[in-house]
Image (cartoon, rainbow, N blue to C red):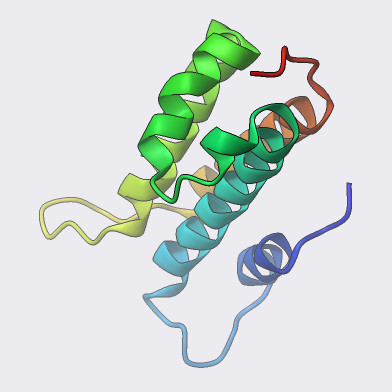
Length: 124
């Protein structure tokens, strides 16, 4: 698997201080990881069912993933997309996501991307 620009930039945010990102880097990192997940799903759908892949909305792609790739993979992708989306939004009433939580989500993302890129699925 080659490292995408999304993942490389998220890795840079997790490993070093980037000038001008104080306070905003955790949300930016979460969105970059979320974009990487969406790109992996787009690659999966382009291979398995291009009609679904042409949809711009992510929610139908997530819902159909359980049917095509299996319920476990569908659940994992839905949870990860939810967690990254939630981490990307600012909530006044709770603490932001930490570097350790983003690192755990990144690890889950890499596992999921590998499964999506190599999973066998029936074509539609």
